[in-house]
Length: 356
Ligand SMILES: *Cc1c(COP(=O)(O)O)cnc(C)c1O
Image (tube, rainbow, N blue to C red; front, side, top):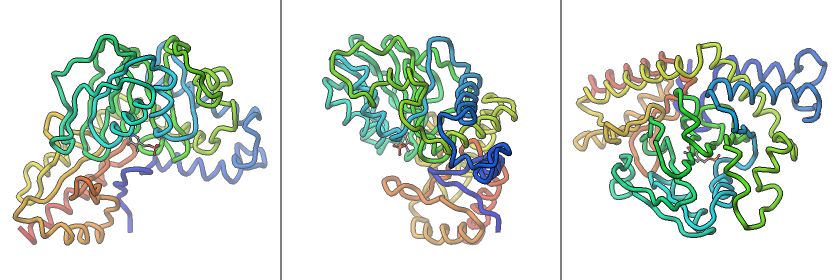
């Protein structure tokens, strides 16, 4: 049976990216060797990483003065690298969920960390507004998509201090103005590629301003200088990222992707909003296009397990909500086909017909 893959991460990738990765594992470009067994310093791999960086820059329209890096360690290592490389005295963070809290925890090791606003009091179901960011902060950090709670910042904030964003779960889901950010980072495994590679987009003039000594491996300048090849990079994940980027380009770039993402999300949110049984958990003006969270209304709460089973039998995978929210979460990343959303909507309405 065809599976509808709503996994939150690692998650669905474009079929063509998977097929081309499989081919490259068997024989890269007919060179008689696998991508798994060539030197990262070979011209074959050099071409792969260069193409990945060039496509990243092209698709996001990244201006001059920025560097794109492919590192290891996940977004979680960036929680540490960002403050260690960019914080002198004071930084500001927006607390919109567990990932933001983890980022805040690391910043606190380095100095004064101001949480300008938090949505913790409502289990992170909205994006706070109307706060002010201290003008003497070295940067202001946001998490643009809150993967667990299904909230998203879908505009590029104007900010008086350098803006830093964790975009692990919504990078390349919409056109954006990179020039408004000092640094953007994320793990690839939500919307971009397999687990194992982390992207960093950094404005070079942000670096070299801190006094503390930085371990070589944790200094962005090391990786800029060596073109992400200071040490052996995650070669295979970088290959798949390149294939995903090629796929995005073939569809017409991030503007075309955004249009599809809006259609998919509208389809599911409309079904939730018109349902007798289900209700969305995120406030409407904060809703994510990437992770759609919903629960059963109180009078139907006891039917959640039955729906999980019903959906599973229809080929739905990964729709269980995160334990801190409960209910259901459908991740509708770039690579998820619209037909999978249709299938889920149909599944919800059929279940409702039988049970409400
Ligand atoms: C998954 C996720 C992370 C953690 O990423 P790792 O690569 O596992 O460290 C951080 N931030 C957000 C928004 C995420 O969705």
